Image 1: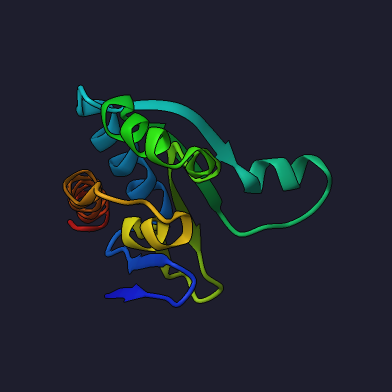
Image 2: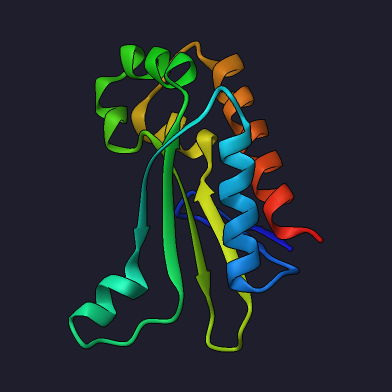
Length: 136
């Protein structure tokens, strides 16, 4: 199931459990020579370190400077939303969801002009990466 929300997120349900989805996501990004993982954030682990409970929730922050740089040259404030981020979390019922910012929403949010091809490439890449992570 794909759900685009009014707040610019594209959300998908995974057919796999949390760890399998996360591993596939990370491996898919790692296998792409154009992408670099810059940071992984394990919100659940950070919460547990402070004695708080949080269902599995992680974010992978990654990028491709060849695509992101022209966008930031167009609108410097876009740097707040780059590099790309994919969130993965488990709902109370056990459903695993994966989500990312819709590049078209970012275009509108930041007033990006004349970068349709770059935004389409990013949108297609995010869709492919997340599909590969959530499907058996």
